[in-house]
Image (tube, rainbow, N blue to C red; front, side, top):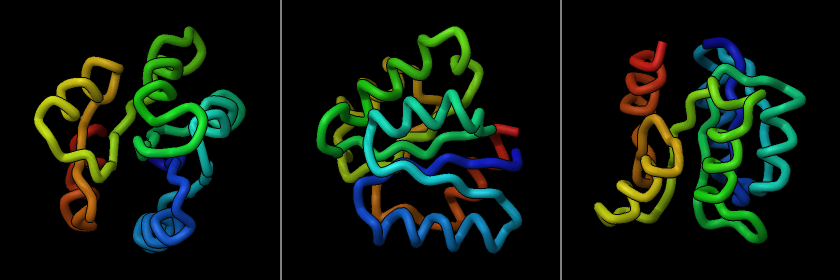
Length: 119
């Protein structure tokens, strides 16, 4: 995995994840919302997407579903990173096509382990 798309409406979250991943040698592309995430998943073809859920417009669940079901982007793994910590939220996220689910605040070391586990 070389290129990671970080999707979050919070500039602070985008910055923190970008810093963490860049320091480990990953190329990071960012998106501020679900619409942007869908467009960049097609134009950038990242190796992985880190997807927030609570965003204006198309939320992370909807964007995950659209990316996971699109012919051109279905092979891109998605890790949902969200404040929504209920088991039903996690199950719903996985049913939309996510490969993994982490609750914020995301532990950097754990995130890196999960990224490596995806390949």
